[in-house]
Image (cartoon, rainbow, N blue to C red):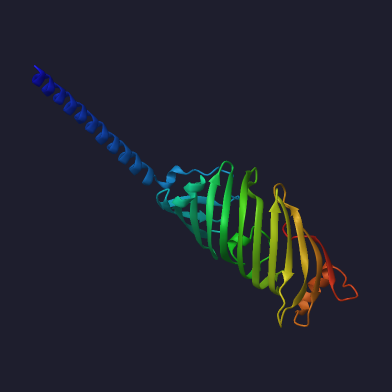
Length: 273
């Protein structure tokens, strides 16, 4: 009798182990299936708000997944920027979902870490190069520009009625072989911009970098709001050197009368604002 009960107990134990094995296999299958869905999730799942980008710009997915994909940013003038996104698993340790984003096209080469949030986007470790005659610059001023801009920085972009605008930011920028065309092309030499944005208010300094053949000397202070109706004030002094063209001297004369020390005071607003 004791022997029979032992056999029955063994059968029950084997049956329970079999059931547990089936549940384990089902769990592994479900987890594998969910993992496959997650890691092959298409880029088309991402939808940007209609007003997230400036007017005339559209962002569309081309290929890949949420974790490694390719995008196209179309510009109003017909040009486009190719974007590559790569998920950064290490950001999960800080409770973030971040992507390494590389941009190329329309005179732009840039790289940054992008972290989406609720109604905002964090951009960190940005570094890039932009041709000043790029279609991307035409929204900043109606005057044609020339030269090459190299910059680094970080920013928090906030969703507003005007799209994504910087709420806070730090920017360091150098504009090499700067050109600005009004009635004719004006050579400005090499310029440097250092700026900060705090609660949508920009403050910064634009400086003419010294060189043997620099056409300008001086620096300008920039200030103004970015969140609603951008209006950036420019204040400071500029001085034409012996390398300045007659056209540049004429333009400086239109901005103000030179002081006794030869510097021209500047007090106004950026073109296009």
